[in-house]
Image 1 (cartoon, rainbow, N blue to C red):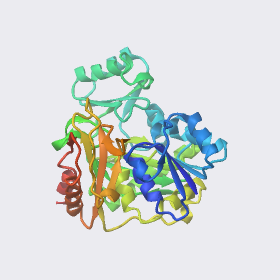
Image 2 (cartoon, rainbow, N blue to C red):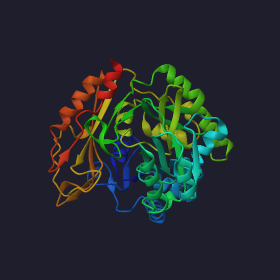
Image 3 (cartoon, one colour):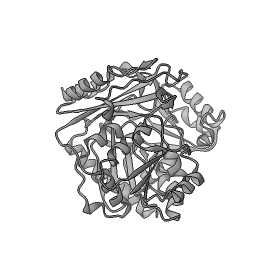
Image 4 (cartoon, helix red, strand yellow):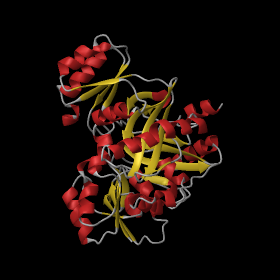
Length: 422
């Protein structure tokens, strides 16, 4: 089979490494890919949002199956465009991808179908939004409605910060048209859990849970990032809580999307908060999370491509999906100093051969045959072990063998989880 993977980050590298294990796979193309992914797939410089370019390439290269992983091309209808020329895909169509593409849509969906989430209001008028804030409890959460590279959410600690967040989104357009509407919602407290799930619209199969670390620096200090590391499974997510989530959140979401004529087929990401009043949805994503994928897929014992094709063909119930029940995983992100703000690029990356299999390259390029840094988050370094403490230790041991000029990483990935275990 000729496989096409859309995207360019560590998540895509993890997907490619997993599907390479399937013996039917002959060639994997990645559009646009990156310098590190080039070791495992043929990278072609066509952007993930260039839908016409992607379709043309897929037709000319006789692609048998496509995997569309980033949010932008899904929301833009990449799956629809590939399906239109007869290429089956893993990923939701445009109608279903709105569950991430519009926070207003997803909040209204949850309200309509009784799926637990934070109380909220939606505004398209800045003055009305600011007036609404005047008597609300702080902190409060301000969200740009559309996609914003994972950065369109601001937790305001006081009224001044809340008003500034609304103005920056609606007047200053810091997130472009994504800020035409804003969602203002109550601030929830409790442990956060990420759960990715395979669904074909008829069956819902949650993957192993995980815990992301969003802040740039140790002790959850610094600016929000795309994610500085993950562990799996998340110790706060017990079997009892998983049952509650399946009954009150996962299946109701699948059924709600069906009822709206927006059947979701692909990977549905549930960002959850385990509040004192039970699990609630913070956000949905219409695709694999990054860097959650880098700890979840290494724990998958089933063949990923087989599962993906079963999702596409609406026969997920027929396929066993098995994760390592007694293992833990830790992924530490190595980033460029200065991220998520300004940082320098072009430093040579040295990765020892004996750890390369468990390194997922996010931001790198090939220059004169050498791998060099080309992004804020550069690498995800994953280790699997029998226990979480062992996985964390092994991941950092691998990190310490890798070098590039301005590398930095958090040194406390997994420590919150270890406290929960104790």
